[in-house]
Image (cartoon, rainbow, N blue to C red; front, side, top):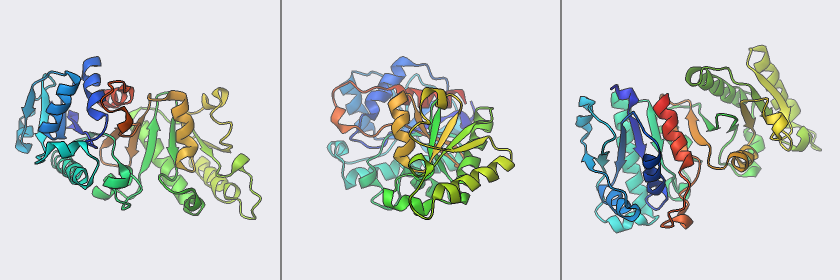
Length: 322
């Protein structure tokens, strides 16, 4: 077993549905590559009791990873101590420190052993990021000194990528540049070729309704279209700009592998409407594959045992095969 085959998992927000969908995933699929959880033993035992999930916990030390003799017959755990387990079920500054510790340990072993597969559970961005980063994509990229990154919401039939991520609408137009479009397209093209062994067909959306504007400066004519023309000359399979209101019609979306939109909800809303939980969030540009289930902590569903594990199943299965 190679270090690169290990799947490192940070469950994320303590007050979330992650462990419910994680235990459901382990019951539904067989996983050949060892999963290593980085979390609180007390929290895991508490959640296992709630879900009536029985499996032995194997406590690891970071140096134990050297032997490489791990499997999924038990839960492989790097324990992150937390003095008060009751606090772990509350979204607070305490949970922020706990999550930060989990990420720090994960990043340490990823760098030390050159690991390639990482999953993190949903995070309460408002509390954890504390306005320092737009999203987890940018947070992890900063930790690995990665300047160019992209958020790919992946489904094997159709994926989407927002040019800008968690920005208020009023800031989006100023962030759109030819260079940024080129960077995102290049990352998408590299990922599909290296991980999926195919050249992606990429549709690019315009910013404005119908790609038209009553303003003197039309971003779609002045920025988006020239960027597509430049990419076409460089032999990328890029098309557009297209109007966002029709690109997701079945006869249109079947022509492409990826739709690049100008902002977050322009592409995530229709994709989630079409595929619901059958999608995963992949960060492109990192020295490893980072995936997150495509949903949030969903605290309204805590304790109901009704959460759908499909997105996490897709995340684990993707890394287990690649």
